[in-house]
Image (cartoon, rainbow, N blue to C red; front, side, top):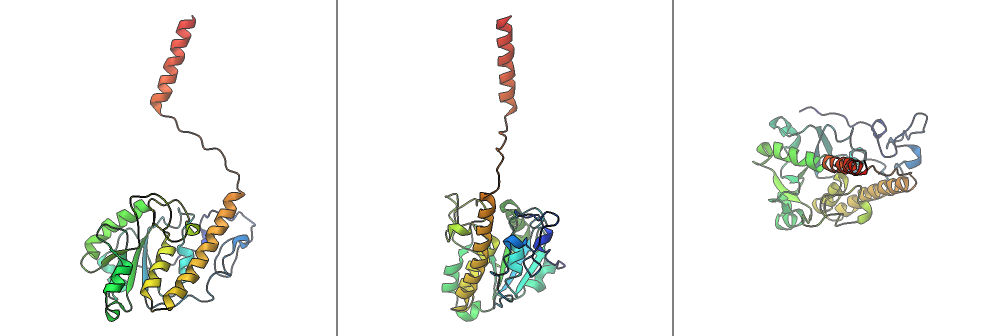
Length: 259
């Protein structure tokens, strides 16, 4: 599978979409100048002993205005991005470093923190962290399609997720980019940050996590400010056909009685 360069954030539709003539930052983040995140990004991409590989759905950037991939790509140096709907054996050279950890909240996934505690340091040095990026529906489809290839060697792991509770992150509520299906589900960038805290050498992991979380926190703050001042049109309530039919019948009956 061939690599595809990640499009600039300026080339995608975003919540703060750039109209013609509006100044755009050209220093690195590609966002409108009024919401530039360059001051929050690391001066140079952060080096990590963990190789982060992300299979991102072809629509993840074009149709997801809140995608964190552009910022993630500017935050980490040891990052590999693969566009596609599934991983195939042709992707093996990209994810050849062992162990390969598939970070996805599946029923058979072990808690990443527990896996780190139970695995001797030499056996978990220089790991490959594999993630799937897209909507939750897309990610589930990508996971199912990739399992025939991954199940023979990848270790399924996850961050804490409570599938019995709707809602926000278990880490910081202010980092929630959008409504998540279950408590503990996070954006791709936050998932990478939390995982690197555990996988990177002691001390270094916390530093990397804090830098990445700082970028994400700034992005969410800009988004919240944008929504606060954005006039919201009332949403048209969709009516069911049977309700419309019932109302029409009632009107006809009323007219019949009045004649």
